[in-house]
View 1 (cartoon, rainbow, N blue to C red):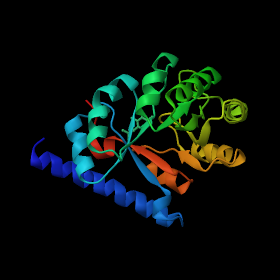
View 2: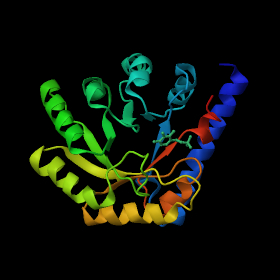
View 3: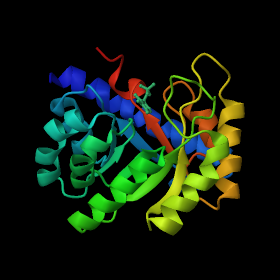
Length: 226
Ligand SMILES: *Cc1c(COP(=O)(O)O)cnc(C)c1O
């Protein structure tokens, strides 16, 4: 990566960090209450390394296959990297996912939760999990329906012993996101879950205003994806 490109990348990263801190302050929350998950899908190891050199350690990937190609080597060099899976997970990828990720944000059905519980026991690992909620009730979108979230949460925690700490959502595209963020916040509060993963490039300051503890940002840092 050319130095000019690398320096522009670092500048955009710093700008996002400042925006997050400002949004937190404006919401009357400590800056440390919001964490940036850099969404690095499709990005090169080279670009990711610029952010690692700048001190960033928390990243989100969408596809298990792609993450397995990029991250084991980076994790060996930067052992304090934390990786979130933010894309849908197929049960046939559960083994690789449990090996690589620290947090899986996208539990949205019982069968997947059962497979994850089995696999983490087998590997002797203990991951942290969020439930993905289909806040806009969109047919094509992943996520548990809002009405089924309490039941899924109960079976994850009570029946399977999974450490579920939060909820995640991707609101419908092209609509005002705030009612959906508010809905997720209300649901999390009713389930006593402290973490809220919501907000992307277009709307992360708004998500922070409405209680996000994790924002997932890609484009504002890397530029448009190829
Ligand atoms: C790609 C992606 C993001 C980041 O989106 P940007 O608009 O590029 O910031 C966040 N969350 C999920 C689940 C994604 O797939």
